[in-house]
Image (cartoon, rainbow, N blue to C red):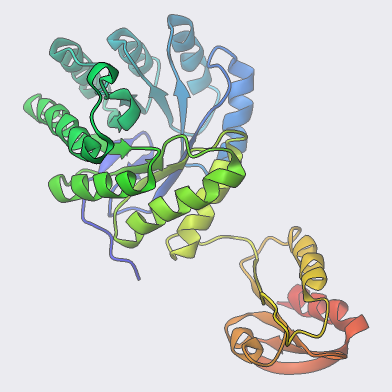
Length: 351
């Protein structure tokens, strides 16, 4: 079992963030915040998929007005993503945000920061200090990439000290990069330096098919070390996919229990004497309609088959002309190839 780093607790509406509570999956609405109906539809889809927090962009006064309307139409705590403008932050807080995100790269005035903190304190909401590597760089005299972790930590330290000076500790920290190694390094650094909850993410990870591996490597490495209290997977496309990927990353580390089947499939080699891949695809299609945490294994030969079957709830291990059915690690029957899928399906349905 992973031992999580001990942190303070931050409160965002009904959601608690920190080491005493489960890791929260969040996502961000891709529609304009002025599109109230479109945002509400997307938020409802995200919460149905498993998001515990949802963030929206609030760049203009009209977006602030839309945000306030959306807050009243959904049942999940909302986060306002704020850049450049203290006025937008205050409007979002007064409009019902459970949490706001501030970017030290573009809100630098101490007076503005203190105004926002005081408003957040009065409304009892959380603030994420969210540093993105791209937003704190001075491109006229750019920081070499190997030194950007130090730059992010320096920016974070200065911001946190202002919050502490103002007596505000309902905060979450994040340092993000599109680079996997710098994301890991910078989050390890803030975990060592501060005891506030940490929001994990890899910025601009790519299209869904391209984002999966770098996001899994970066977040998986950190989560395995006990770092991270809320996560967001950044993909270009349907945000529901962000939640689904996040759930699978957490489930792989036993930090989240999926209410869906898990299919284990033999990679096959020269020992395999049947169309295992075609059979596994048929099983996967069938399992898409099953909503229970069941582990199913489809194995190709006797080398690893019995061992994988022992760890599965239901499994098949087939040879050239027949297959064996396992349930909870025990061999319970045998079937011809033509009857194997029906036999497996029967055991899954009875589980």
